[in-house]
Length: 235
Image (cartoon, rainbow, N blue to C red; front, side, top):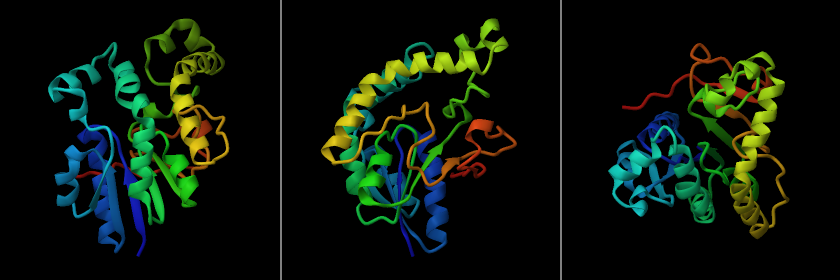
């Protein structure tokens, strides 16, 4: 029997696929622990998995309905999620993932658990980052439908133009990279030159695409080391 840690950050849409995986692991005789927000504890325990807390919780930002309105805003939602809910909490989130993963044989993590790779590296265990949607794989051969990437000149000059735009977009992640670098220094880990969210995760044993290949094929630059699992449904 293996103890498997699953760390996920976000709403029920981020939680449910991990609960489905936890239930499947438990049915096969393994011991899953789900590391997530305190507001999800009851759902984790009803699924038969052990719960471990992950900061922040949605309640840390005020009225949950208002927080979700800001997070889902079509114009400013991504900025709110990254610069209010994620980056300022990286150190605390990382400490929580480290504590929840202690004693585990492997770690599976969602995209916004930004220091999961560092946790697995520190503990010397396999790491399986997971994408819940095709847009997480920022491939210049199959980019998401963002307005700037649909400009005619960009479409006509792919993938080179998209690679350039991705490089410019990645510059906005410098505050995130600095916080991750601090965690790695505190844990005496070597620097990681990769760009979070844009580059294939460094040190991953396998990247899990938690959706069907019929729904979205794996882009050609991500096929090596990526497994399309199909949709893990819960509830």
